[in-house]
Length: 591
Image (cartoon, rainbow, N blue to C red):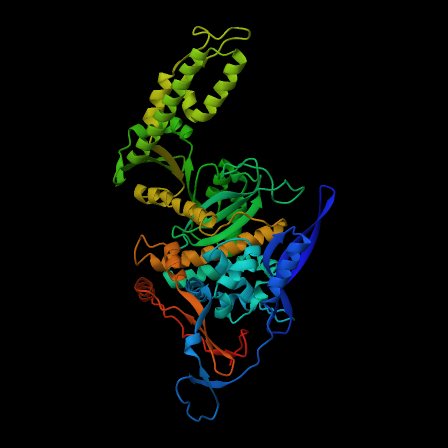
């Protein structure tokens, strides 16, 4: 280990920042550097103290040896190989690292046959870097304990057993290697999803006739760039102050992704559907599919094109409540049909489309409670303003704040403000409930309207298809939460896209694990299974010998009963323990 400095000009001055860096010799003889510890700006005395501390950790390389081992308190028999006695009293446990979740990630990788897919596409470099193992490390890291590539390089790789499982040293966790691997991935995105579709079909008999389509956004806390995909736009994360990119995703009702795209942050939802229709047809061919979307994504023009297509492209889409005004009289004479407890629907065929009016008692109670709470808060605030009698300009400002807080409930109140230069009095500032609008809102609470071109379909089936949109919301939740899609630290568009691609690869492993767990128990989540397996650790058992060498046995801990139950239910078997190693000092080599 040694100290390395970097200079940076800030506020017209030159600053020097120090870090502890370690040189590691890897299998092909090269030396790679690992960033161990950031120290910041330190003075000469501190630097000298750090140099003295670091010197203690420098060791000579060990030499290979093949020996037979026996306890020191017993006579050793004569054997054909060298015999060395070990000092059991000097046994030490070192380098504890997480093994179980890393092993499970590799099992999921093999289950999807990703090794066969990537091997011809990620060939080793001329210097011997096995890019496939670098990618596997990036994906396992994103699945198990997501963070930046820099954190993987600095700490996570050494705290995990990925090196043991892949037969790799620290070379694959070098920061430059991780970033260069990202640059090799995007060209194979479409081929990967075609491979995964076929694999999921074989493993789980997955169906791809119903496609759920939606968009989300992820933001960047950085200065707006001059060009690229990071732009300002409608933020689903409520961060309109930050630049963002938009992610469009297609998944099945079981959560299996078929395609995704990273779009500029100012992309409108309604601008995306036409391109995705063509993309899916080009990649997977024409088929009898049903596209399920929320309102705001398809335009009337796009829906007309879907109806006019040969064969027609089927859709089921949410519709704004304003459309209900034109259809209300037609729905009055239609009977209600129960599709589940507290949910009833009506069906209406009109102009070649099927309209489904759904009423959910639970949704009605929720919407009513929210409307009542906001309306009561607004009513109290209006009375406060009337008592305060502020100036007209101050009143308008405070009304604007009250309107923002009340949301749609503000439209249920008629507010009369003073004219210019009029004082604010109970006569000039008045408000009352808009009872006609309130009755209309109460009547429509809990209702939502769907439209489709599927014809005379069973209303229960149509409603069930639409409710499955919650699966794509869950996919976005897992990408942003469990898999740490953000924060994204990259600055280049291609690196941002590659970062998201790795997150989607991790999501593919996660949804595969979810499909394996679903038949076992509905409450058993992939995250809980990964946490259980993460408790299986690997440690290095160091046994000193009487001739000054050290026997090293890398051993993963035996699974606890709850872990063994999961292994049995998932039909998984742990591998054999790694072979022992022998060294003349603390360096490790295969014996």
